Length: 318
Ligand code: MEV
Image (cartoon, rainbow, N blue to C red; front, side, top):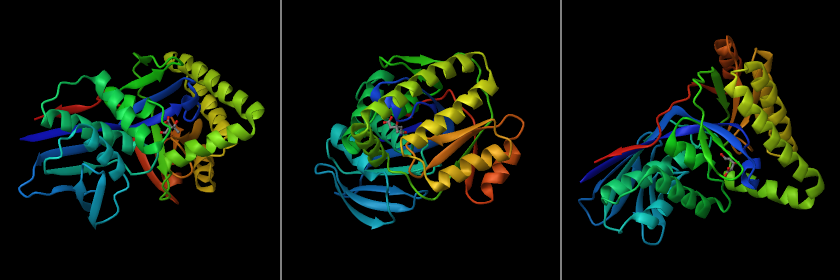
């Protein structure tokens, strides 16, 4: 038996962090993916290996432990949690490949989690649908991170550009939103769990200041929804810039992210902001007619990706 699955990376356009407090958010699946293949092992050991991510480990799926043979697997805890949830602990070989930069704020952990669960369901012939898969993947993220909104795993499962409402209803934008975006990322990885906890502590220490900021981020996301429906790029850019300021207030900005955000604007982006948890990771810049200039500007000091939104969510087969 050989089961295969893949799931896309995501980028958050509006509402990271405030979504944890049930404010709305807008995020889209992008054309970078994580791929998982599961086969039976020929030995009595379970092995996880990734050529792209340059690691290999022996897994103890029952006790969520691993013995590293090579490399440094940043996302292994998500895989072990998913295996522990679904797998019967028989020896398997799991191969992971991915062209999503790990820890870059593009939802590599969600994509790996969704693809791992989908491959496991196929491998064990367990019936599932996107709703149950997104739910289970969210449970895995929550178990690993402590606090997590369902946003990343939803987008990785369903694909497309998604508006997640206050009451967790998922709406897919029907507009053809082929806006040109550039993502810049540093080599410094963000730690989503830590960033979410730090925001919570800041909020607990300063509720009268931070609570209104979080609700303003929700309001901003609703304005952004209207701007996207009208394809009003100038308004979207303006709201991205405001959103970046709010994220700075929440303490998730860094010198490197700031540098990329302002470099992007200097080279012609009409909006730029942190995307994802911050503290490292990525920024996203909206730059109609200026993609190459902005990409070149960021690439002088950091890593850059030109991304497209994709409608394709999780896919799996045996
Ligand atoms: C991380 O990609 C997005 C955060 O809002 C955390 C979450 O939604 O779980 C920072």
